[in-house]
Image (cartoon, rainbow, N blue to C red; front, side, top):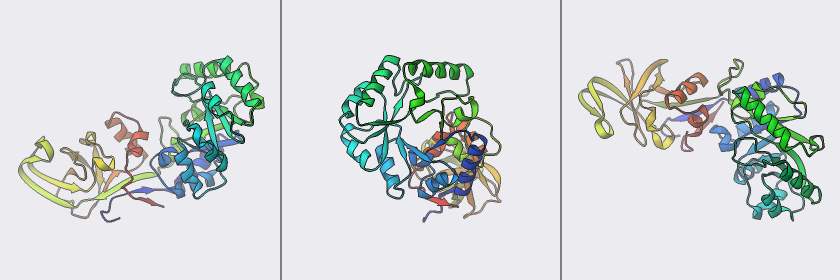
Length: 349
């Protein structure tokens, strides 16, 4: 780390968050820690270890690549791939105990010959991304699996707007309709809830698993005051320019008039996209605005005479600040932290 720019990851708080969530929602035998996208931008083995130490007994990834990266240091934790894996890699899944998702009858037919696969069945209840949306197809798939050497360990769906009770009720009703011709009690794990759904939706009797994602990092639209911040982004002032008049940066859109401008070595190549202009950072616990067009590797902050070269610049302070930045960018907190690039080192505490 040579430019004093890094993300500070609090693994102690990640573990505490998982423990606190499980303590409050303690009637699920299976807790899936969703660690896709490098643990939502947090990255690293230590983050996954903290999630497991906090109580998650299963992990979820988006691709076989992500699952295999985990297998480099953890050979035993069960891993479910939420995405679709090319049939030609089924032997890799079997050898490395990667659970696959079956999302259609045609996909099942393409993998039916493989013996020893462990699978979960995905039900589409309105997300319209992956999954089965017909009860007869669901029954056909169950019958085909029962006559194969594939082990059906689980069945699940994804709630796409858990903050809306009407949508939730419609999705759950659809899940129950699509699975009405099969016996859910014969499937070991049934999981319909992700972070917000686990907290916002009443548990169904047949559900014995839930997926924990963004909530493990204390983020989300729900209000859970016990959840702790886990991610901050820090850089430093590398130069201060006192500009009497003129313009600043590319396109010269920002007009300077007796301005004190701090230059900070982080930019859109690191995930601080140009739309961040106008929002604030913290220097010495005081707010200062980002001004001018953000560059690939640097950005500008309008400061005062109290700021010096070498002062730390906190671009993402805590969860409240991340949510405010997401609002400024007209996006969600997931995107803010996932956008922070891999050339930003992660420092763990």
